[in-house]
Picture (tube, rainbow, N blue to C red):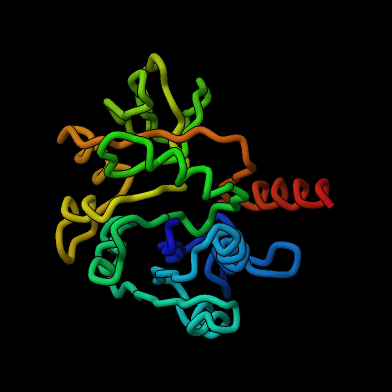
Length: 238
């Protein structure tokens, strides 16, 4: 069982203004509670009890609401970026507190994943350094793309924007399981992006980084239109 999760919650959310004029993007309310609270509840279902949250924009809004996590039955620790460190650079700040395997997710994703199923697939892989949710599709114009071998291992990563079509292309999403070893590829105190820098570096170094396919609902919320899609989905389920 994986007991820890890192959540990246520092984005400005400029495309969600005016909502994000006074709220960090992961604090946008969804049916009465912040998106970040949905994350904590979903991970709790699958055994996660310790959270590490990276903050930058309006950090006190998050800290004042969640505190140390005890009100939600979990433990929460924070890191506030004074200067942007990128998604990977911020994870590095928790290195001495993370166990050998942990979840990572971008805080602006609404996810109803079964994380235990993902972990069960992960432990059966050969020498994994990480795993990311992906989907085989030709519709990847706004996403990074991975090419996989027959064992779902990444052999090449193509960052957006794209100028060509790729065979056996998988659209990369924002939910991960990471082995602590991956942090050794992240420089100290430097801005470093997970998708554009860390993962290509790991894959080109010959490490075993895998894709995970599933059907549970997930949607990145970076525009008002996508927020409405999530709300419509949830109303249809009630």
